[in-house]
Image: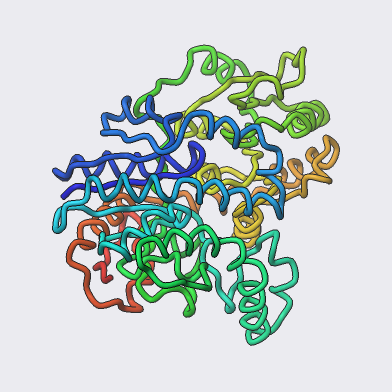
Length: 438
């Protein structure tokens, strides 16, 4: 089997596909990672075949655009960027498609993969890294563009979704996607948030205890659990980092995300908060211009440290709410403080609060004294770290990746969709593996 893994986004979006690629290679399959050339070096270190999608300049433009983190404009920008890649991705897939041998795994923003499935019958597994992608009237995700929907009754939510589709979503998606579909002789589609799920298989890379499946999700969903890949196996921890960790109490780790270039206020608040608390801190940022100058001795900045090596040596994690970062902190059993900005971040933050292992602050309130108060509340309550440790014990990354691989393998011979496929297939160490149904 030849698996084409299409990843769209930042490091947190690419890492899970690398994890699946490594496991698929071990199972004897051929794997090609398709993503922005910014990640070519990561693919090389992992030993995966690589095909570039787009240009490095496109990645740079995305990270430099502050509107990418806007609660409302961010989604529009993601759709526009993904639409630019639709036709090139379609051609890349068809150039390598061999019937009976090729399977594609891709997120919903890989529009070219979904069109290739419809136009040429290419087997496609839609991969969701975050539960916010599932639109549900029974349990709506917490999203910036759904501010009031959760207050409506279920029937009102359904009506509102249809109104949003007709007035906003279909107008945003329709011209570019339907224009391309027309050139292939495909009919127009609408209600794109239903269309973007593959009818073959839908794979969620998170556990059901984090996001319980809903009856109005697609019927052929498999939840495999968090894959938890972060380059720990390919990058040693820097001796300078370890020296700082060994020199005192457990630090609080702050990160605004691997693609963030506009986090100066976030990191300034981090320095102020740790000073008020008398705690040590590590600031993680790939773009050092965000970091305050002349950091105090109890605060250090590093560009990147694999979370799998760092977080077990930390007291708490303060972050933007990306799903990969959220999962890594859950695996480390850490309390989390989230400053959600856009996309799935508010929903991930809300789920952490429901689980009792995190708190959140809006960007407008993310200031040193407020951050200090929230961190004090998280770290001073022994019940929060205890709950976090119990959840960490439920995670099994190797089993999650194994279940994900099985879904991809079965996609070449799809079975009839079954609601039982929505069961949580991530297990604890003592649980037997569940049978996958697609």
